Image 1 (cartoon, rainbow, N blue to C red):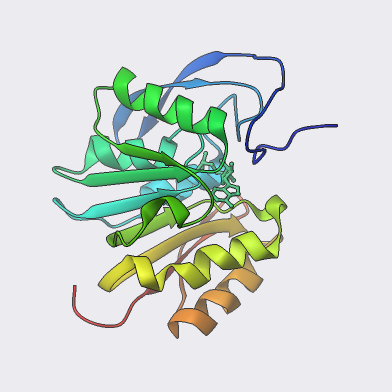
Image 2 (cartoon, rainbow, N blue to C red; image 1 turned 90 degrees about the vertical axis):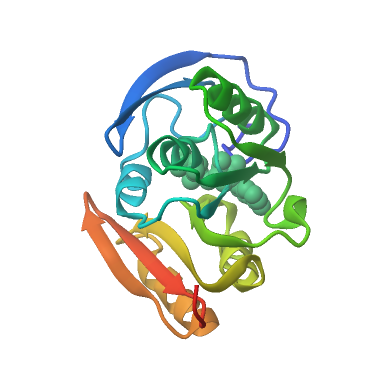
Length: 201
Ligand SMILES: C[S@@+](CC[C@H](N)C(=O)[O-])C[C@H]1O[C@@H](n2cnc3c(N)ncnc32)[C@H](O)[C@@H]1O
C-alpha cells in the first residue's frame, strides 16, 4: 500500500536528500527523505506562510504538522528569542525536524503525536500550519477547533491552503471558531489566512 506524507511510521525505502533554502532572508539547510511532505524543496504555500507570519521578538510559535521543520526553523532563525515548538504525527518527519534544528544550530522543542496531543496545556502567541488537506476534514478542522485552547489572548492562528482546494472552506471554519479570518497573503495559487483570539496579547 502507498504511504502518505502523514503516515505515522513510514516504512518506504529511504531516499535522503539535503537542500538549502533562503527563508525570511536566512539560509537554512534541510535534510529530507521519502514519505515526508515536499521532500525536494520547500513547498510554495509553506514559503508564502513563512514570509507572511508577523511575529515579534521573544514570542512563541507552534509549528503544527511541522514536517522536516521549514516553518518553525525559519522563524527560529529570523526572530530574536523566539520560542519554537514543533509537532508532527509522522515519526520520520519528527526525526528530520530534530536533525535540521541541530544542523542549523537552532533551538526547537520537537514532539511527536497527533494534533495538540503532545502539548498538554502549553499555550502560544502564534500557531502556524500548512495543514494536511489530504488527511481529511476531521484533521484539518481539528487544527482550527483546538487552536483557541493553545493560544494566549490576542494570539493568532496562521494557515495556508490552495485557493482552489481548501482555502474558502478553511476560512469559513476559522470564522466559525474565532469569529474572524482574514486573507493576509496571496500568491502562486495559495492564500494565507489569519484568525485572532479575542483579548490583548
Ligand atoms: C502539508 S504537510 C506540511 C509540512 C510542513 N509544515 C511544511 O510546510 O513543509 C502537513 C503535515 O501535517 C502532518 N500531519 C498529518 N496529520 C497530522 C495530525 N493528525 N497531527 C499532526 N500532524 C499531522 C503530516 O505528517 C505533514 O507533515
